[in-house]
Image: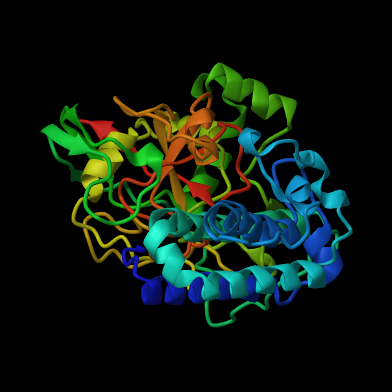
Length: 421
C-alpha cells in the first residue's frame, strides 16, 4: 500500500510502478500492443498511453508551471471517460489506433516521466495525494493490461503464449470435491470502509457502521475441481439455479463453462498467458460472471457474501499476502496451503459479492474531473473483493471495492461462499 508522500518516496514509487508497466509489454510486438479484441478491453499500447495522459493532464498540465504538452492532439486519443476533459476517441475503436506506434508511446512515457522527476519537489508540495492517485490508477491498468492481453491472445487459433509456462507448477489431478469448511465471522455493530492514513479511492469512504447477523464464510475460494462437479451436475442447464437475467445470458450466449475453458481428449483445458494448459483442479476457479457465481452458490445450498461481510471477516489478515502480481509473467491463480482460517483471502481471484455497487452513506464526489473516477459508475454493477493474481502486490486492501457488470468475466473473477448461522 502506498503511504509515503515525500518527494524521495514518491520518486521511488514512480520508478517502481512505471517500470513494471514497461516490463509487462516487453514481449509484445507493435501488432500485439495495438489490437483490441472486444469493446470492454483496450490495447496494451492504449493502457501505456492513457496512464501517461493521466499524469500529464492532472499533474504536469495543472500543477507544473510552463509545462508544454507532448502532443496536443493526443488527449483526444487517450482520455478514457472524463467528460470534463472534453471529447475523446470512442472506446470500441481504440484498436484502430495504429499510430502512434508502440515506440512512440514509450517515448511519450519517457518524456512525461522525465518531467515528473524534475518537478517532484513541487509535486510533493502541491499535489502529493493526486500524484498517489495516479500511481494507483496505473496499478489498476496493469491488471487490466494483463486481462485484456489474455483475452486478445485467446482469440488467436494458435493459442500463443505471451510468457513460457513454468513447468515446476504442475496441475493437480481432478479429485472428489471435499465438503466445504466454514469459519464463523464477526457479529454485531461494526465499522466498514477505509480508515487510517494510507491511500484509498473515494468509493471506499466514508467509514460507517453496519450491523451483522451471524454468518460464516467458506475457508477457501471454490476450486476448478468443484466447478467441474457443478458442470457435471448440469448446473448450466438447470433453470432453477439461475437469476432470470443470468438464465437469459447463459442461453443467449451458449455458456456451459468458465471463460477460456474447452474440452480436450484428456479433460478440461484453459487458455492462460502461457497458452493452453490443463485445468488445475485444486486452483481457484476464475473467469466466471456474477451470474455463474450466484448459480453455483444456489446449487451448493449457500449464497454469496455481502461486501460488508467479506470486509469484516478480512480484518487482521495481511493484505499484501497471497498470489499477487510481483513481476511480468504468466500470472494465474494457484492452489495455496490452508495456513489460516480463511485462505487466499487476498490475491488469486477477485471474489464476487452479492452487493450492488452503490455509494456508502454520506458519499460525495470530489470536485473537478477526478470526481468522475468512481462515483458515476455506481449503477448496475456488483462489488468484488480481495484482489487477484494480476493485482500488483500492495495495491489492494480490505476496504477496496472493485466492480463489474454481472455478465463480465474476462477479469480474474471467482467466488467464496457464505451462509447464515
